[in-house]
Amino acid sequence: MDRATCSNSAFEHVVRRRAVSGFTLLELLVVIVIIGIIISVASVSVNVLGRDNEIEDQAKRLNAVISQAREEAEMQARDTGLYIERDGYLFMRYNYPARTWLEIEDDELLKRRELPAGLQNRLWLEGREVILKTHAESMKDVKQSAAEASSSSDSSQSNVVKDPRVPQVAILSSGDLSPFELRMEREGKDFSWHLVGKPDNSLTVEITDAQH
Image (cartoon, rainbow, N blue to C red; front, side):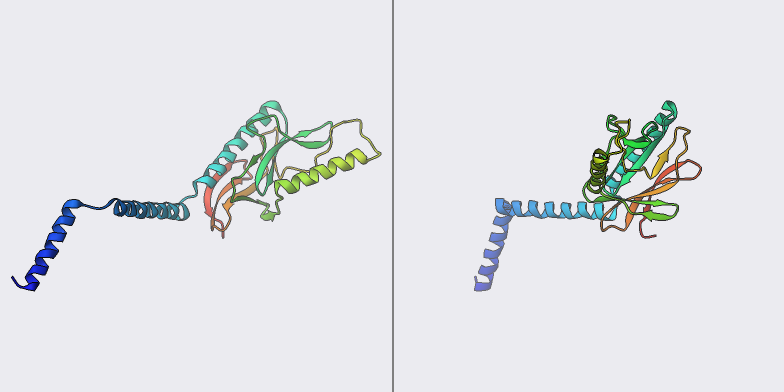
């Protein structure tokens, strides 16, 4: 038997032995890690290129809460408002004796809700974008107003401190809803979910290109 034949025979023996013995534990671990990386990349791609479920859930939730707030406003004959911040939103009711809007804090459905990290609100009224404040900025105004009221010599008979915040969206006891367009979007992305209150008092929610 010549050297070439011996080499081929040895190679075939190694291959057959390899096929019988299978993969080592280290090789299996490497394969599992590679598969995990592929699955992770695929999941990220679907999240980036597909629908953003987190924004969709937030937009649809607010749509449902506004509808509920409208029903309560009509049933209780109390004017309600939606105050929108860049990083969240809250509902307010108008206090006629004190002539001020007050935040609703004792209602689990209507109390303030903060958007998840990375999401933000943008608001349009009558075709113009409204510059929204963050919750921290809003609360700074509230505290400053309270401090000014406590130091004022012109004390009011009412012990209700006027809130400087005024809802951008009115939800009246008549059932009327002031027109608005709210966009919920993720920073750095070119799409958003839109919640639109139309002049006919209808309310719609849909996904739209944020760049239009």
